[in-house]
Length: 231
Image (tube, rainbow, N blue to C red; front, side, top):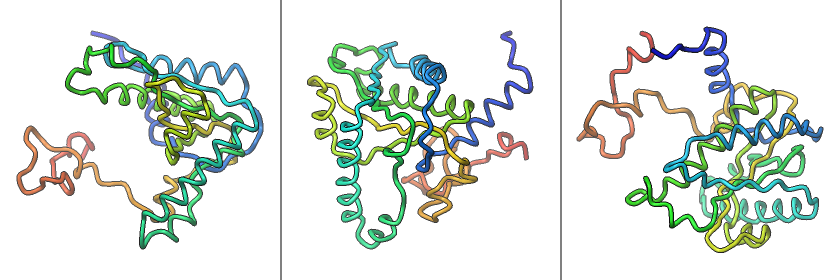
């Protein structure tokens, strides 16, 4: 039987998971290049369907390009606000990115020529996106362990960002990642603190075998997870 991690090592893994935050407030101190390489390596060791490794990571070091990406996000922020109707003003009060303040700005993208990879994707082609999300999560957890904050910005026009980064046909951006030092990590997810939304109870997301007939949407499922919770 494989040996499990030591108690302190296991606790550190769960601590990183529970203390990870989508950060929007940064201080502009540079990120140590050695640490940055470790984080990029963590992303590159994510699982991927068919071992296709569909992630491509652009490190943005050109100040004018960073400014242009920020402007693209700002335009879409306003468009998103307009689409929210009654919650427009509430949304506009939220800080949704820290692109101009963070020490490092990265663009996580899906590679081009992905259609040749059908292992695990023949009926679920979106698994390339799931694989990239795993790479982002790897980096996020590693960044928290390193004492760095990270924020995933997804408010942008895909074609505009593709054009700005000169991406080839078939490649597309998935997220703009703000990475850097922070004064403090949020005690709770910021959107929860701001009362935009709250975390669903575990019972609402777990059930056994079949989707409950009285809950086709998946909301409010009363599964018995007492064993998982240690109750």
